[in-house]
Amino acid sequence: VFQRMKDKAKDVQTGVTEKISKASEAGWAKLKDTTAEVDEILPAIRELGYSVDGIQIGVGLIPDIVIEISGLTKTMDEPSYQRILEEKKDKKLLCSVLRTLQTASGLHDKVHIAGMKSDTAAITLGLPPKVNLKFTKK
Image (tube, rainbow, N blue to C red; front, side, top):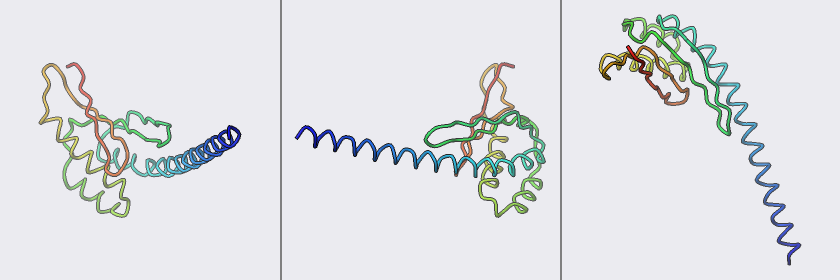
C-alpha cells in the first residue's frame, strides 16, 4: 500500500512538473511575440512626441512587459493619434496601447496631488493595457 501511494505521488509530481514546463515554454513564446510587438509600438509612441525612458520585462509563469514613457504634459493633437491608429489598425495591441496612452496623457491635467507632478507613465502590455501614472515632487 505504501509503495502504491509513493508511486502515485511520484506520478502526480511528474505530471505537475510537465505542466509547469509546458506553461513556461508557452510563456517564453508569448514573451518573444510580445517583444516583436514592442518593436512596432515604440516608433509610434515616439512619433507622437513622447519619450520611451525604459522597458521592464517581468519573467514568471506569465511574463509581462512594461513600457516607461515620459512627456505626458505635452498636448498631442488628435489628428496625429487618428492618423497612426488608421495606419496601424491591423495591429490590435499597438492601437490599444496608443488609446491607453492618449487617455493617460489627458489624466495628468485632471489628477492633482499637492506638491506632486506627473509627466511619466508605465504601460503594462496586455489586452487591455494597464497604465500607472507616476507622480514625483515638484
